[in-house]
Length: 250
Image 1 (cartoon, one colour):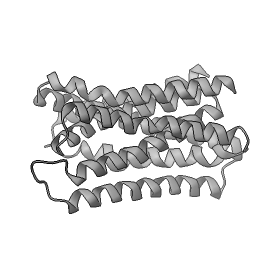
Image 2 (cartoon, rainbow, N blue to C red; image 1 turned 135 degrees about the horizontal axis):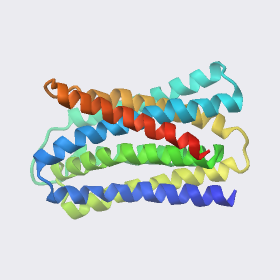
Image 3 (cartoon, rainbow, N blue to C red; image 1 turned 45 degrees about the horizontal axis):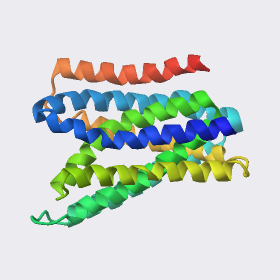
Image 4 (cartoon, rainbow, N blue to C red; image 1 turned 180 degrees about the horizontal axis):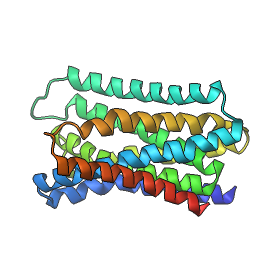
């Protein structure tokens, strides 16, 4: 159990530090950053789908067998992710952009991040409770998703009136809720059997939603180009292959 605590806390701390990645974008031209991000988003989508279908769901089935409960937990993960995103988007659309102060949509972005990062902590710790290789695979998938998301969040905060220093600070502060999420799961999990029976398929549902609803649609926003499209597909496939390769760690 000590190893699980060590790996879980180390992983969520690494994920939290990823929130500071926005600082590197300050010296990168917008055009170059945009070209790089589309492939990073593609890779993240593949990694999330790969983790869900190659690691999480097989582990959930192995633990409890494939019954209706697994399907319901996956759907619940998709549903909760939808509701969280819906609330954040509702606030984004209902507050006009004004000048001279921090705008509500930027604050709501932080609130959404806080909830999302707390769930990330739950997810990572629950994965380590299955076994360490699954925990590592999930951590990598979360990090790959967090990189483009955190860069985007940093931009939203700047656009919403935060200074660069405050944007980095508050982004990092909300990211630390992942540590709280991990501690909650580890504390409860050490005394309550079967918590992973819910959290693992729930996580798979969350990952499927993020990849299918948030990341992949981003790849269709630009004008169609064969070369770019093939490179995006290759990046998705590479993300899946990375998750598959982690099976051999076991």
